[in-house]
Image 1 (cartoon, rainbow, N blue to C red):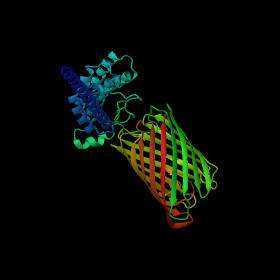
Image 2 (cartoon, helix red, strand yellow):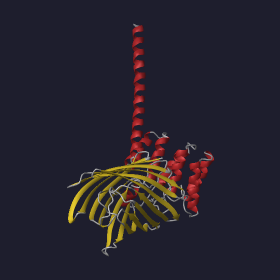
Image 3 (cartoon, rainbow, N blue to C red):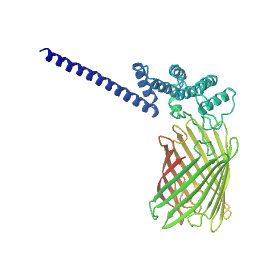
Image 4 (cartoon, rainbow, N blue to C red):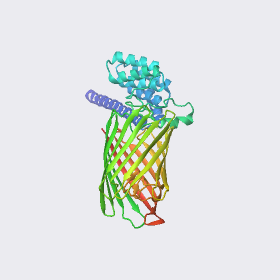
Length: 445
């Protein structure tokens, strides 16, 4: 009898042990799931939801330093720098060798323009993590901020122009400004302005474009494609490009190259040359503009175009004015082409409105063009010219664009769709319509 009772007691004890262990495993799995969910929300830009989840999580698990660090980052991204500082200090007081937390804490002070505090934190971090390049870079930025000097070109801002880092205390402004925050520990930036000569960490880019245009009458679809390579140097950028177009059973190729040389602070240039032996493109084309970016947010340019066709040459004057306003960019560009034969001046214009999302590589926009000019030629798709002609024809174009990047920001995808109303070259006053769509893939390395 005693032996039977002993067996029963052993069985109950084992069952209790397994039950307790099972509860512990389940609790750990729940903790991991909750943290992963909050982590994903934070890096998807849903700061408020992530902040609430992490707040509850850290109350239940006060020893989880990784969760506390992420909670501090969400406060920083929301512009609540004081709460972020308090949470970063709590983490660093227990672990003084976590480089990622030091970096996030220093950037929090840079966002708040507390440059002296940022410099002090940098020195403390370097005392525990010696000769770290990123910490030394942030220290240099903090020192530059104290002395009111221009940020170095590899700074945490993408351009030297005006950058907004303080979030308004008014709730209505928080959402608009927060949309520009690059929510990564590695590079939390607030980018408002970017030009073709802005310093990039990755100096090379390959872009592939493909588009098609269909018409409501007479014409077969036009298919176009291009491939380009961009190389950024300390003197500017160079972009060789190969364009291909197929129209009316004819296949044409054009060799193209763009140059964006730096001139001086706020000034850069655009230079273009293209060559083709196909009737779909001009034999030669040359273009150039000088750009000036003012710290107020205005951008001005002026230049010209020279296009050499088999029968005659065309010269155009170009100019533009752009304006950055918060997350928006507005641009007005005109083309003025004096006509020698009929003594009339042909003109056209383009209006671009673009809204940037989390950074300069993520945006959506609308482009509208109207007028008479060789720059508004037959068969165009978005901002891609598919077949160039000398005819001065009237046209109106409306196109929409959307560009977004991959999760690691190495690749970007750009889509556009447009509607064109264009005069028949052989029947003045008669118009046809076309719809175009295109996709561009870009890869940085």
